[in-house]
Image (tube, rainbow, N blue to C red):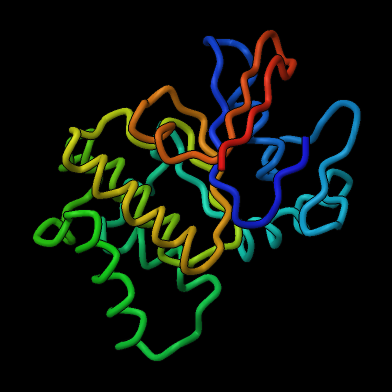
Length: 202
């Protein structure tokens, strides 16, 4: 499977078909037992853990189904942490970026709340903001709209489509959400760990 720069791709299939495993291998979180994973033409499946961490830091944004927020940090700090790892701009510039993305996902007013003070949908939006704020080349999203109401889901998808069009950001989703699939230009169907269909649109 090859994904080109700027694709808006959805991976779907029944539970246990391998969707999350595939995302984790693409995202350098898991290493394949056979075969290889290449990112920007470079094979990453044989890099050390430290090297893989650097690849993830600078190239990939993750939206996890389980959120994976840092519990002792506020919503603002969770998003800020992601960008501080790669961006050494002035304090005021970083603050502006963080507040802009929090506003875009509808979290202004909740910046100082920690994860245990947020609802499932609010935590998911913090996770989405954290992935988007550093404007990575690739964003991997595991059921990113699963806990969002239709209004917030539509808003989040609009942000992603804008990044995809304006920054040529590549998005790979694991989802069954018709709203996400509506805007995808490629559909990959997994069954028992194998690609059973791979269709492009437009």
